[in-house]
Length: 168
Image 1 (spheres, rainbow, N blue to C red):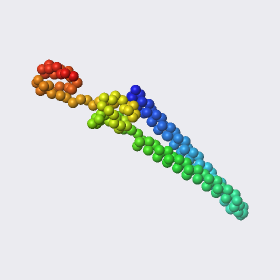
Image 2: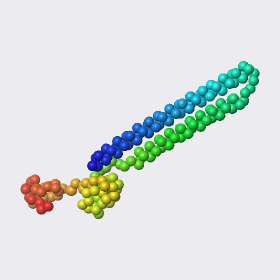
Image 3: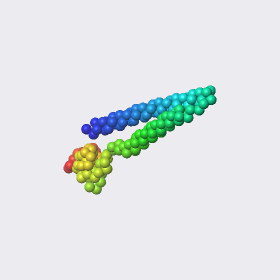
Image 4: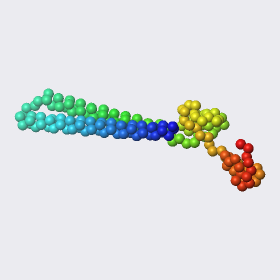
């Protein structure tokens, strides 16, 4: 069950990153469209000044409207760039806040420490009382056979050297 949860979290994380990339691409496209609109305004400003030059007359209200339109497009570009920076900051914060990969829980004097949320759990507990993650007891240490002194796995019922039966 924990594996499925981890896979689900991993898929969600990938989906979030893909969504962020799509959002960023859309916002970059918006910036490019606004830049093109600014360029068009600048072209029109140039045409207006060129015509003024040709006609010998000045038409300030026309130029003022183009300046206002260009300023509006530049403001939209700045807002969109700020939105991209915000999305990137959130992605960085999420990456830094992601929990470390699960490892075997550490034993404590009172039981086990959950590797997912670091909560203390009573000895013999199989699942974390705080987050529900499965707790696995650390492997017991090897022991010595009282009859021949050979090292025997703590889980072993008999000594591999002399056949001594351990009382478990």
